[in-house]
Each structure stands twice: as structure tokens, then as C-alpha cells.
Image 1 (cartoon, rainbow, N blue to C red):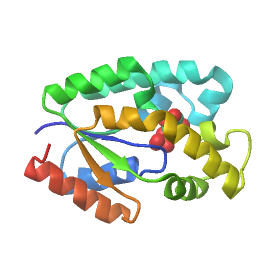
Image 2 (image 1 turned 60 degrees about the vertical axis):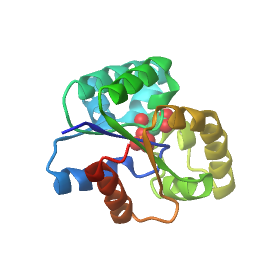
Image 3 (image 1 turned 180 degrees about the vertical axis):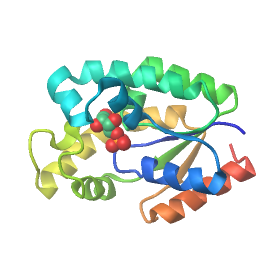
Image 4 (image 1 turned 45 degrees about the vertical axis):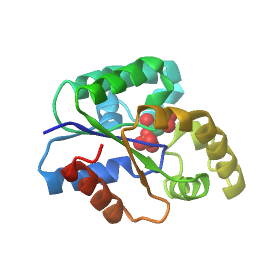
Length: 181
Ligand code: S3P
């Protein structure tokens, strides 16, 4: 079976969709954020606070390469596309047959989902819980910086703004099983 890699901004549902697909497709699943936490021996907010983003990104690249060395479902973190090294690894993996699905959502939907888990995303609310407008502003800016990269490495896209996790998982499963891109 070809690898299935989920990319997209924080709050796009990558981890939850990957969990559903693992059950539905019966394929092993890897969650990069979880593997980074295992490598560091601490939770992501603590990695950012104590070691900084650069160390986090180094661990992320290592976790990505390890995950892609086996055939499976990979849920990435939203910032995996920020490093050219990672984008190259992802493009190579698409060339070798991986399907890379961009779970797209607009800033409004993403910031609402992010606000449901306060403190979980150091790059958004690492300095304390934010109000709606500030969260939206931060999400808009970061999404603008990253969106071209998501399009650059994706081989397929699902528009998730109005979809539940179940519907998103069904859409990804359909693309995967039909071999659409
Ligand atoms: C990040 C996204 C997070 C996590 C870390 C950095 C980012 O993963 O890897 O907080 O830079 O977008 P999720 O996309 O699963 O929230």
C-alpha cells in the first residue's frame, strides 16, 4: 500500500483523521508530534519553552524521515512544510508513490478549532490564552506564510471548512482508495 501523508495547518484535523483512517484502512499510523515528544521526553509546549523552535524543528525532521522509511499513514505537524529539507523529503516521497493530502481550512475555522485546545500550540498561544481576534490575526499571518508550501508538496487536497472529522476521513479514504492523485 502506498504511504498516505496528511499535511495542513494546526487545527486542520490531521491527527484525528489519521486515527480514523488507521482503523478504517487497517494500516499502521504515525503521528509526528507524538514521536517528537517521545524523542524529546517532554510535551511540545515544553520543548518550545525550554529548547526553542530550532531544536523542535530538528526533531521534527528526524521524526519525518523515520516515519517515511515505512509504509503507513503519517500525520504531520502544521509546520513540517516550513523547512526546505522537509519539503524535499515530502516531494521525493510523492515521486516514489506517496499520496500527500492537504487538509485545507480557512483562518476563521482554524482559529476556532485552535481555541478549543488553549495552550496546546506554542506558536499561537504559547504566551497565554488569547482572545478570538488575536488568535485569528496570528493564524491568518502564519497561514499566509505557509499556504504556498502546503500546495507545493500536496498531491491532493480536501477542503475541510464545513466538514466534520468523520466526513474529512471519508473524503481522504475515497481519494486514497480510488488512487486519485
Ligand atoms: C506546529 C504545529 C503543531 C506542532 C507544533 C508546531 C506548527 O502540530 O507540531 O506546535 O508549527 O504549525 P499540529 O499541526 O498537529 O497542531
